[in-house]
Length: 145
Image 1 (cartoon, rainbow, N blue to C red):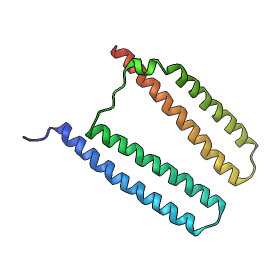
Image 2: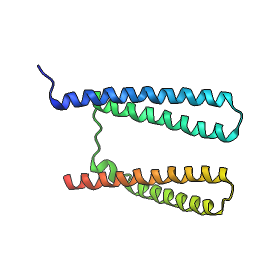
Image 3: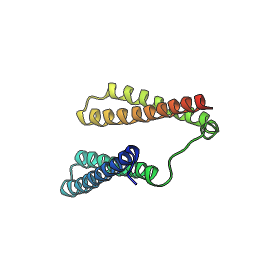
Image 4: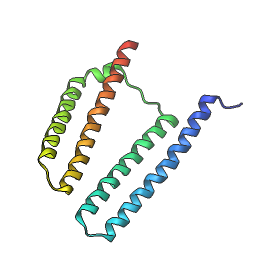
């Protein structure tokens, strides 16, 4: 029996995700090599940030693959409802972290401090964004109920 367009698209996505995982593994290896070849603390810190992000990306990609090949991800309105207050509290904590980081960034004069503070601000903003996307998902679930 021929595969449906949806099944083919899923297989294509899995193939691309696995290729992307290979790229992330290369990144992990390359950052380790760079860290071994330098004692510069800034370069080492940046390589560690990139390595840690690549490890996390690889894990998320595997989660996506698993969700397409094993058990689809599901979430009920009740799943979110029982923890939603804590998520909102955490989101406010993330926003406070952004405010503090931006305040500190305004005070900074050293280029190294500015680079790392900019990174931290973007990362904290990313957390706030993904929590906002979870809220959009919650709204979507409530419309289905």
